[in-house]
Length: 235
Image (cartoon, rainbow, N blue to C red; front, side, top):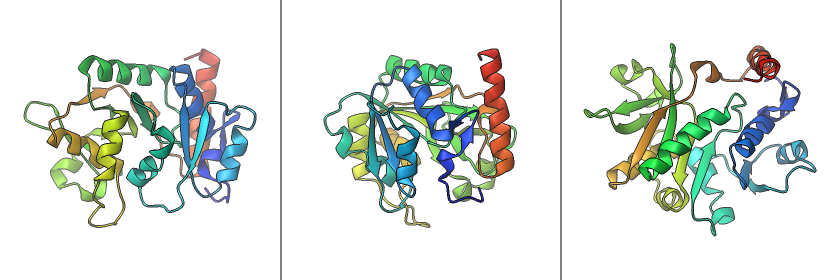
C-alpha cells in the first residue's frame, strides 16, 4: 500500500477497512468479536476507540499463517461453545446477506464447518474449492499448490467460514505446518474435518464483485467507490 499504516486501517467510504468487517458482523447478530492483531496493533485499537465493548484484541506475535492466527483466539474463546465466524479483516465488501446465508446452511446441516464461496472469472491467486464425485466439498487447495486441472476451477474461497468453535480449535491443535512454507493454514481444517467424518458444507453465496483484493491505492479507490455506491442505494 506504500504506507506504514496497517492495511486494515486504511479508509474506504469514510471508515477503516476492518471497521466494515466488524460492523457487518454486528449487523448479522455477532455479539462477541475477537480481532487478531500484530504489527500496528495500537492503530487497529484506535479504529474502535470508544466502540469496542464487544471486542477482544488478541496478539499474534509471530506471523505463522492463518491457522496460527486463528488459533491465537483459542484462549479468548476457551469458555465459548457455539458457532464462530472466521473472516479476513481486509475484506470490507462482506455483506450481511452472505453471512446470513452461510449461517443458515451451517445450522440446518449441523455442520462442523461451512464455507461461503464465489465463482469468479479470474481465480488466479485464490484457494480453489475442490469437490468430490458427488459434488460435495473435498478440499481447499491454495493456488501455489494447485495442479493445472485445479487451477482451472473458478469456485474460490474468499475467506468466509463458519465453524463449530470446539471442533475448530481441536483441529487447529493438530494442524500440521505446510510442507513448503512452514506456516499453518486454516484452509486445511475443513479437509481435516471431512477426513474425520464431520460435516463440511459449501454455499456459493459471495457475489463475484465482492471478491476484490486491496493491495494497492488503485484497488483501495475501487473498493471505496463500490462501498459509496452501496451507501447511496442502500444495497
